[in-house]
Every structure is written in structure tokens, then in C-alpha cells.
Image 1 (cartoon, rainbow, N blue to C red):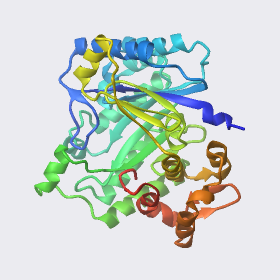
Image 2 (cartoon, rainbow, N blue to C red; image 1 turned 60 degrees about the horizontal axis):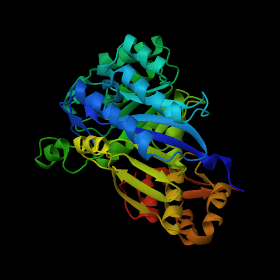
Image 3 (cartoon, rainbow, N blue to C red; image 1 turned 30 degrees about the vertical axis):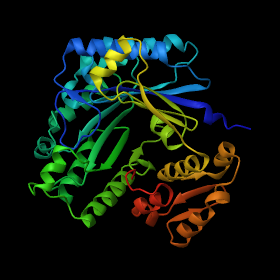
Length: 389
């Protein structure tokens, strides 16, 4: 019998516009676009949804507007996107989590109240750091004061579920600065926190600066200490760790991200957006102007697809599940694949267990404390790369 939770699915909507490009960013984004471009892109998103997406069975539980900077769109434009989704899903219900990412430098009370009225019920603020010199180094358009005002404005606008992103391991970042960032953001009383280690992506300005010796990263031991301090600080503040990078107050976890970690299906709209549906993964045309032109010409905007074979799908399910604090359910694995995880991946599990990196109770397999510290190594056992940690 199929687990009902396996029929839950999400919708990711990519908004690629930014006022400035962060030095660490390799996402599919573009700067220098204007209102006409925004309107044209929103129209293309709606057309893609109306014309090219086959609506699946199951329960839509989450919509996520990511970017880029979705908060550059006018609230009326966000409303039009959500109304188009609702038009084709009249029985979706009122309990859908609708998240929008926002840069603190782009919002105010009036604008946030209008987003709330448009249907957005969860906000994700990209705070990243609390020291203005780090924000400037990353080419962020906001200041620490902007972040404080944005959180206060979100509460005044009626948002009861707000996430804040922070990054550790920044160039020249000290342990004291990281602790200051944690405590300053906790003082804003968010409902959810995402703590990400800085990843250096080839081709980004930050990677170039590091290669030229203009900047240096904290030592590996210091970065590990930052991760430990982040976890301990948030635990003391009453936040529940539910995934390697994510912490929340009770009942405030991200439904959308959990769809990813449990390999539930998700559709995707927008330039370069990736979707997944029961073993099939696909992606859209990456070029933003080309995407709009293709939609307007009635062309298929899918740039490619791949099918995971059974072994690949099971391995991906395992390493994604191990990212969660409680690991993954052996029962749910069996419901999805018809076999026990140890049946086909037993030698890997035995090796990791003998090394003290995973543990198992009656139903769940999870990382140990040591396994969290060596998560990259554990994940490589299943995917052959550390790019996902």
C-alpha cells in the first residue's frame, strides 16, 4: 500500500531578477532588467503553467517562489501567478505553504502586507551576515539595519512564519563575528533559521578573488567550530534541528524543503528551473530571454531530462534522507521501492555503522553526531561526490 505522504507534491517558481549579483552566487539570475521585463516574465510563467504543465494527481502542499529576488516583483504580479495556479487547482485547499524569498533591502510594511494579501504566508529573508563589511564584500544590497527593519515589517504585515538565512565560513570571518550574527538574528525572533556553509563555485567573483589571493577563507577547523556553535546556540534558543542546515521552532519546518529531502515530486516553472517526478528529472532553458521567447512562440521550454534508474533513485533517497535530523524511515523506503534499504545497500550501511557514522533503531537510519561532522564523506558513499553537502 502506498504511503499517502508520497502523493504530496510541490511547485517551485523561479524568479531570476536581482538588483546586484552576490559575489558567491552561481544561480540562474540576471541584473539590469526593468518593469517591462518583469511583466513579460510573469506572463511567461503563467503561460508555462497553463500550456505545458500536466497537473498531477496528489496533494499540492507547497509553493516556493525562489530566485533571484522574488521580492522585486510587484505584489500584484505575485498575486497573478498564484491566482493562475489556483485556477487549475480549485480543490487544493487553504493549507498550502506559500514561501517567497526576499532581500531585506527590497521590502517595507506596505509591500509585505500586499504580498500577504496575495497569498504568501511564509517569508524567507536572506540576511546572510550581521556585519556590514561582510555584506558589502558579498555585494549584498542590504545592511544589518535593513534586516532588522525587514523582520519588524514582516511581523507588522502579519507574517507568522519567517525564515532567516545565514552563511558561515565567509572570507576573514571570525568566530566572534559568527556568534554575533547568530545572536543578532535570534533577537529578531524568527521562526526558522537556515545556516549554510559558504560554497565556492567556479566562475563566481568570489572564486576569482580567492584564486588571486585577495581574500582567504577560515581554516577548516574554524569552520567546523562555527557549525558546532551554530547548532548549540540554536538548540539553547529552543530551535529544533530537523536537517543538517535547518532549524525551526515547533511546527515551523519548511514543507517545501522536506519534499526535496524525502524525494517527493515537485514541478517547476521558470528559466533554468528543475523539476522531479517519480524518477524523472527535467530542467528548463536557462537563458532568461530565450525562455520568454520560447514561451511566447509556443515552443517547449524543456532543455533536457533524465531518468534515474532504480539503484540511483534508492541511493539518492538515502543520502537525502540522511540529511534530516531523524534520518529516514525504513518502512517508508519499503513502501516506495518494495525492498528494505539494507537489501541492496547493505554493505555500505555496515561499513558506515562500523565507523560510527550512522545508527539504526527499529525503523529509522540516521547520522550519528560524528556522522554529521563527516557528512560529506557519508554522502559520497551514495552519490560519489561531495557537492551536495
